[in-house]
Picture 1: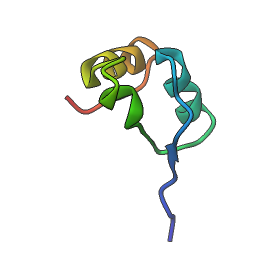
Picture 2 (picture 1 turned 30 degrees about the vertical axis):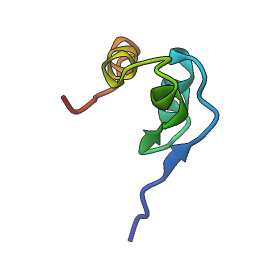
Picture 3 (picture 1 turned 30 degrees about the horizontal axis):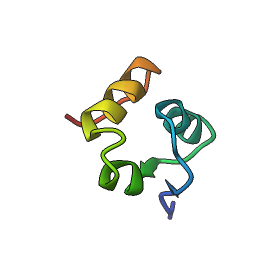
Picture 4 (picture 1 turned 90 degrees about the vertical axis):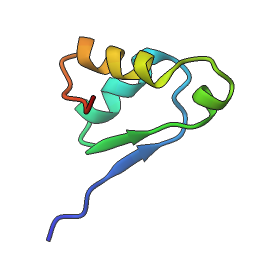
Length: 57
């Protein structure tokens, strides 16, 4: 069976998330950018949508 891959860590800019998906990750995980209030979850989802990725709303 297939094991989902979740990319975690290292994203410091909104344009860091989509390349992880494009490289084959099934999902991305972030924490510090939200704890520091650098970005909102909506910001990241919007950036992913703008890059052509499917996101849950």
